[in-house]
Image 1 (spheres, helix red, strand yellow):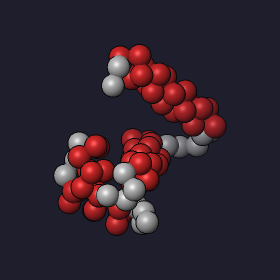
Image 2 (cartoon, rainbow, N blue to C red; image 1 turned 180 degrees about the horizontal axis):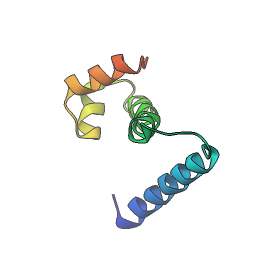
Image 3 (tube, one colour; image 1 turned 90 degrees about the vertical axis):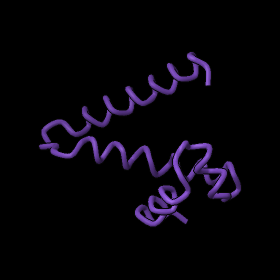
Image 4 (spheres, rainbow, N blue to C red; image 1 turned 180 degrees about the vertical axis):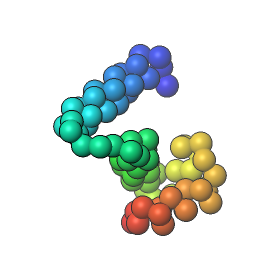
Length: 80
Protein backbone atom coordinates (compact mmCIF):
# COMPACT_ATOMS: atom_id res chain seq x y z
CA UNK A 1 0.00 0.00 0.00
CA UNK A 2 1.36 3.41 -0.90
CA UNK A 3 1.91 6.20 1.61
CA UNK A 4 -0.75 8.23 -0.20
CA UNK A 5 -3.33 5.44 0.15
CA UNK A 6 -2.55 5.11 3.86
CA UNK A 7 -2.93 8.88 4.34
CA UNK A 8 -6.28 8.81 2.53
CA UNK A 9 -7.55 5.92 4.65
CA UNK A 10 -6.30 7.61 7.83
CA UNK A 11 -8.06 10.83 6.79
CA UNK A 12 -11.35 8.97 6.31
CA UNK A 13 -11.00 7.30 9.71
CA UNK A 14 -10.17 10.61 11.40
CA UNK A 15 -13.21 12.25 9.80
CA UNK A 16 -15.50 9.39 10.81
CA UNK A 17 -14.26 9.38 14.42
CA UNK A 18 -14.60 13.17 14.66
CA UNK A 19 -18.17 12.97 13.31
CA UNK A 20 -19.01 10.15 15.73
CA UNK A 21 -17.71 12.21 18.65
CA UNK A 22 -19.60 15.30 17.51
CA UNK A 23 -22.80 13.26 17.17
CA UNK A 24 -22.20 11.76 20.63
CA UNK A 25 -21.79 15.15 22.31
CA UNK A 26 -23.48 15.10 25.69
CA UNK A 27 -23.24 11.31 25.98
CA UNK A 28 -20.92 9.81 28.56
CA UNK A 29 -18.58 7.58 26.54
CA UNK A 30 -16.65 5.00 28.52
CA UNK A 31 -15.65 2.40 25.94
CA UNK A 32 -14.85 4.43 22.84
CA UNK A 33 -11.94 2.21 21.79
CA UNK A 34 -14.11 -0.92 21.85
CA UNK A 35 -16.98 0.80 20.00
CA UNK A 36 -14.73 2.18 17.25
CA UNK A 37 -12.79 -1.06 16.87
CA UNK A 38 -16.00 -3.06 16.44
CA UNK A 39 -17.40 -0.56 13.94
CA UNK A 40 -14.23 -0.81 11.85
CA UNK A 41 -13.52 -4.51 12.29
CA UNK A 42 -16.90 -5.82 11.14
CA UNK A 43 -16.97 -4.14 7.70
CA UNK A 44 -13.24 -4.82 7.29
CA UNK A 45 -13.77 -8.56 7.75
CA UNK A 46 -16.97 -8.60 5.66
CA UNK A 47 -15.32 -6.72 2.80
CA UNK A 48 -12.19 -8.86 2.89
CA UNK A 49 -14.29 -12.05 2.87
CA UNK A 50 -16.29 -10.77 -0.10
CA UNK A 51 -13.06 -9.85 -1.92
CA UNK A 52 -11.73 -13.40 -1.45
CA UNK A 53 -15.09 -15.01 -2.30
CA UNK A 54 -15.38 -16.29 1.28
CA UNK A 55 -11.97 -17.98 1.39
CA UNK A 56 -11.10 -17.69 5.08
CA UNK A 57 -7.46 -18.73 4.68
CA UNK A 58 -6.88 -16.10 2.00
CA UNK A 59 -8.81 -13.49 4.01
CA UNK A 60 -6.75 -14.17 7.13
CA UNK A 61 -3.53 -13.93 5.13
CA UNK A 62 -4.68 -10.65 3.56
CA UNK A 63 -5.59 -9.21 6.99
CA UNK A 64 -2.34 -10.42 8.57
CA UNK A 65 -4.06 -12.54 11.22
CA UNK A 66 -4.20 -16.29 11.66
CA UNK A 67 -7.21 -18.23 10.44
CA UNK A 68 -8.25 -19.18 13.98
CA UNK A 69 -8.43 -15.52 14.97
CA UNK A 70 -10.48 -14.74 11.87
CA UNK A 71 -12.90 -17.59 12.61
CA UNK A 72 -13.25 -16.37 16.21
CA UNK A 73 -14.10 -12.86 15.02
CA UNK A 74 -16.57 -14.21 12.45
CA UNK A 75 -18.38 -16.03 15.27
CA UNK A 76 -18.04 -13.10 17.70
CA UNK A 77 -19.64 -10.67 15.27
CA UNK A 78 -22.06 -13.21 13.70
CA UNK A 79 -20.64 -12.55 10.24
CA UNK A 80 -22.02 -14.81 7.54
